[in-house]
Length: 227
Image (cartoon, rainbow, N blue to C red):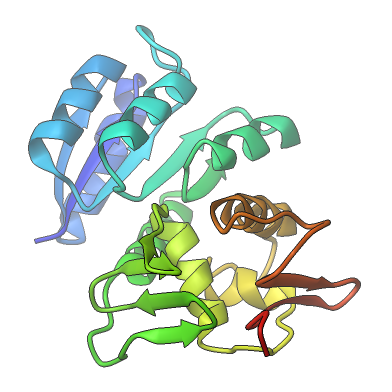
């Protein structure tokens, strides 16, 4: 059974989300404080975390950093903070998705399904190779020139999606629809942030790119720099 940890200080929201997800067949546990939530993540090794940012004992952004220090579990941030700066900083800190309150339970359920779907392994696909990059979808591992890449679940999904289409220019809107499962209403800034983070881990930048090349006004492509 897929396990979900909810870290949310508002009891009404916490209980509602827990009940809805439990009715959908998820194994749900919840916490009202950051430290209790962190303990639940460390001990329970859940498949997904739903995290509020306004927690009573510790800011959610700090908790996210602590979670990322010990786990690659997918994290959906569900918060009232909707400013672009908050979104970008939170995605940069390792969140896999961002949902602004107020939201419907249907929206949250859709995000949960999408994140879990993208983070699941596809053993039918063999390793993908683009230059020195190797992406193993079954093991959910990636390496560059033989060196393991430490990627968040969403970074891995993004790299794998582009590695399946080497040399092909992919629009950010298409990436948003296929990787984030947000064909309508999503922000392309989500893609920009993850591309920036992925570039850093590949040892490059937008101004000095080898593997991830931007085609301005069109999209991005993953290429073999030696080709």
